[in-house]
Image 1 (cartoon, one colour):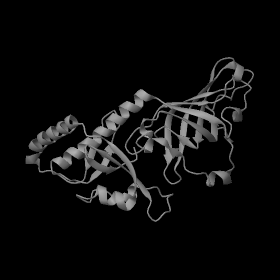
Image 2 (cartoon, one colour; image 1 turned 90 degrees about the horizontal axis):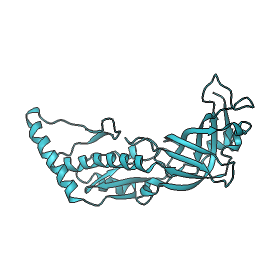
Image 3 (tube, rainbow, N blue to C red; image 1 turned 45 degrees about the vertical axis):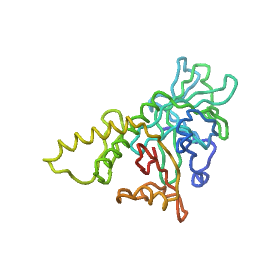
Image 4 (cartoon, rainbow, N blue to C red; image 1 turned 180 degrees about the vertical axis):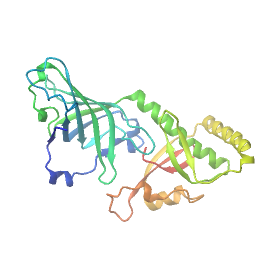
Length: 272
């Protein structure tokens, strides 16, 4: 790939700070827009057989970009939840403003740096634009989340936590091993087994408990706690969670923090 790295040397990249993830707090979970600063922009040729824009380009040209910002309201893919979709637009009140349509947000767990991947459409009038003019370092941008997609994914993820609460209500405190909150077939996996002769009756009780929890409409809470407090809260009934799985390797404190969500009265460490 042909690319241009903007606003950072290799040495700078090594010391870049983690991206502030707005969605991790309760209020931030509903904040669908935020202003941010560009840390790094990489422009990638969308087709290796086609040149970057030149004077010969008469039609719209689409470029793939990767953006790293100081903060974002977009949810990176992870924690069993798909990536947010949305747009990042340069805060320039003139013809030099560009918009990146973001279709994938990922996060490097070691550094905590989120990367927004998407496309920028350039018209023929932009064919002489330099790569570092798209999203210059330290320039301001507005990050906007696709609200309908976020709502759907959030509801799907929350439903998985309600299954946890329903399992607890049915006195089945099996350690959860995986949550898949993608729309093509969401599920929650647990470590353990239920005797085959008891499964039909248990499934009936689980469905009933799940519906009861929905009808009770229990308030959802999100809090960030020191790992020892999260351990006490989330494993008070059974040793279901290893808190080290929910802390970043980049956190060097003796007692790093863990994001804990409480859905339908059930406490669970969660990054989504």
